[in-house]
Length: 150
Length: 64
Image (cartoon, rainbow over all chains, first blue to last red; front, side, top):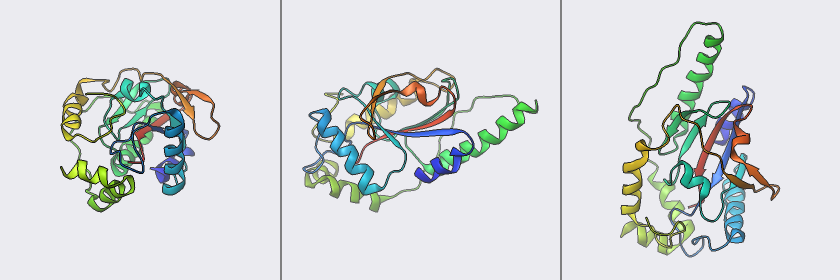
């Protein structure tokens, strides 16, 4: 998603990552008991993953996260002024890129009066990344693995 | 749904959440605002500032 952010910055698009609760808490990255803990997790996320986007930390109660939806890895695209133009219950960079390329091209065409807006709703398909997911559980700790595996 | 900062992952919690995702905040609606904290500066920021003048891609997530 950082590569996507870089790709669209020159086209006037702002990107940010909102840091929420831990989806798979474990011994190393447990539930947030204070903002200090949450900040330290967000800092580790930025450094170890190499996130280049602006990271915005939600409050301890998850006010921003819950206002959108409490799923663990959402992405929204919001038009200038605040209208939601894309929502995804899971973040898939390929899907976001498809939407952004199409939308930015059509917005240019709209300025020329060539297109009109419409609304769609669809099921999308994301690639599996089981190895990456397991690495995330291992990073969090044995408890995260045990909770997920049941 | 239990407390927001849960101590253990529970798959039934996500199943409940997924089932309600399409019912909330539809495309075409106004995005909610909230006050958050900028990790780089430690200062408070308003989410709406992201989309006040530009289109914005906003991802929600965590390390785990």
